[in-house]
Image (cartoon, rainbow, N blue to C red; front, side, top):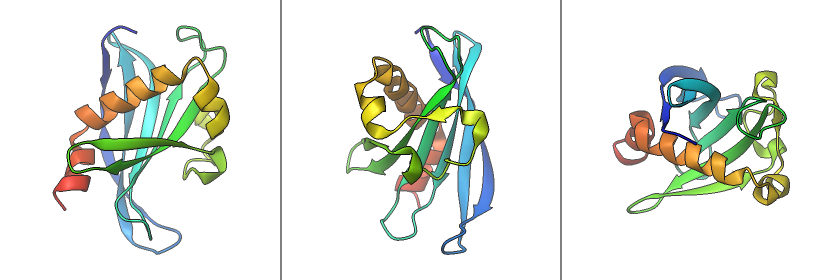
Length: 139
């Protein structure tokens, strides 16, 4: 990977479960200014405290990716940083979004040689998208 950058936008959505309004931040992912992926991060939790429901998708043909696929994660804050946990596809808010390609299940994702790519992208999203930090630390 070269220099990974992102862009972002924010949209308001309504939770089907609790009916609260929440923000989703989303954008494209670039490697040396060439787009190769996208992400979505819902900044909402009904019962479990603040969590960002993230999915990162990478298109077929980027580096060694043989298919368009994605990994779903939950991001939670700590006192000084963030924790990321890969979740199963069926536990992702984004399961019904076909443009994300195949969402890998947790075990498959963690066993994939590509998992480091997804974590690098997730790190960049958390560091460079100000909406995520605002959600965790300024509300």
